[in-house]
Image (cartoon, rainbow, N blue to C red; front, side):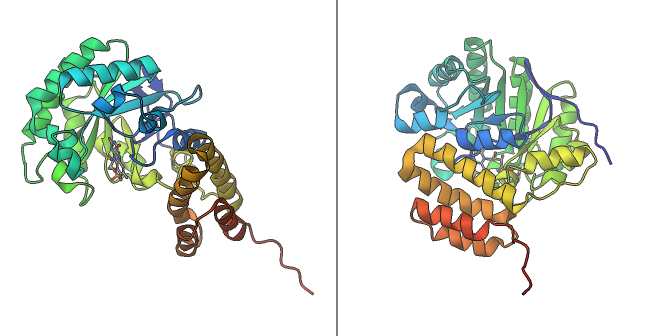
Length: 337
Ligand SMILES: Cc1cc2nc3c(=O)[nH]c(=O)nc-3n(C[C@H](O)[C@H](O)[C@H](O)COP(=O)(O)O)c2cc1C
């Protein structure tokens, strides 16, 4: 069955397909964004950065913010609690050519929350709205979106802080909300509350709402949009190690089966990803990055356990390409003597 999907609109941007690559720390760097775009992702975002790290040159900043002419449209994401720093950080991203400014008030990592950033801000709606207002004023020429959680504590039937932030944010000119339908307290555990997404879309029928949480596979991405009415879905853990997610979702939406990539296709894409990582990180970090990514790519291999173990044992570039030679060759025709 064909699913009719609307383009996803984020301010002045119109994306031809409403399933995007989520911001993913440790994954959504330039190499992976490039790979996901080649598989049909219409939009991707950097991993979250801390506002003040955006203001000073460093190797980490260089790696996270690295982009190129083909890496568009791209969102740049950061978090913090000081409006002055947040404004400066937003200007840095704008000046570097990021197409969307994305403020993260959702990160549940303990070290982040204890320093009053990310998800902690779901307890501070007035402070969030002050940041939003200031950033909107400072960077009027870029779409602005927020990443929010439904609440801070799990047991929060009203989610009053969410609603205060959402209403205030749209009133201040925010272009889209990406709503992770879990509480901060849940981190990444438990089921995402898709009913909450339904109520958000009902409350803001004319606004862009992107849903996040439990988009585990292409069918779930389409189901989230169909059942909750959100305008788009963000593929997060479902797209780690499976950049074909986007192609598969497009196929499913067109009423065709979502085929698994062949071993040849997997090998070719892994090699391309490897080259991009070497170019970005150099040999030492490149190999370690690809070891880590190889482990996640193993999930789509017909023998995931065996291939995961092979990537875990990788120490050198030769080891890594050796895994490809051994495990990513289509079995040839069997010759009968
Ligand atoms: C490894 C990992 C890193 C993440 N990094 C970020 C991040 O940098 N910024 C962000 O907004 N969300 C981040 N998230 C949250 C995801 O974007 C997404 O909201 C969440 O995983 C829920 O979707 P899922 O249940 O489909 O995985 C991260 C999630 C994971 C698992």
